Image (tube, rainbow, N blue to C red; front, side, top):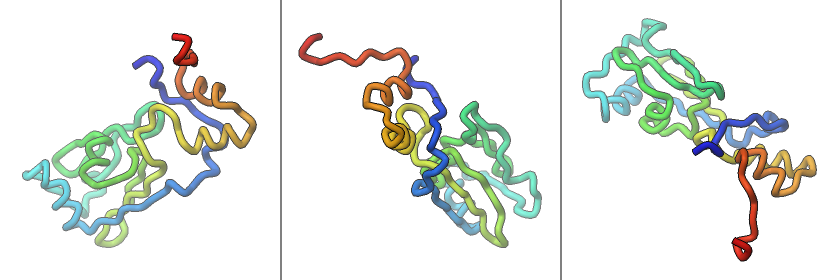
Length: 143
């Protein structure tokens, strides 16, 4: 839909209640990925076998390499139970840590962005028009 666009909102960076971590052992990671990719093979000693390959324009993960498969960020989010596709991957001993920022798909109204705008004095119409481009707000009784 043309009104669904990624927008930047000043003030969002001050919110961290939506940050989360998912830490999986190597075995747990393989088990979760095998629910869809039964032939998955990851060499955990090879730095190139688990890495983010590509980002979207809004800096969310677009493509991740897990061994012999490249997964979309959305698919990774779903399979691993992440709250967002805005994540980083780090290896910590025998574990793989996913540090996640935000909660949601990254298109439409950001709850933290809307809250930040309201706290800065924006009214509902300004907030809605910031997140949804070229929309009109009308009274339903007048339509």
